[in-house]
Image (cartoon, rainbow, N blue to C red; front, side, top):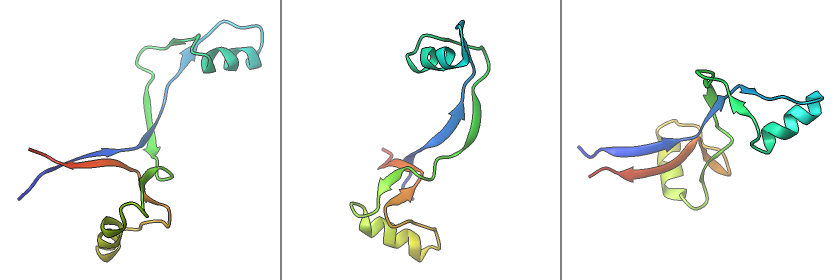
Length: 87
């Protein structure tokens, strides 16, 4: 039976340490990449179902998933970034 490698979009949260004069400045520094990540603070949040393979570009796969009872939206195959057959 073939094997596949599947990349799935997931949401993670990371805590950063930053010195700033205000909350807004602290956020601006984090968004600019000018903050230090706190060790061991990466936390899994959830599957990112709003992102995925474009359903119209992968219509056959989307239809096969629907036939299997997997919910597939009109625009994306939820959370799947890439699938390749493993060698």
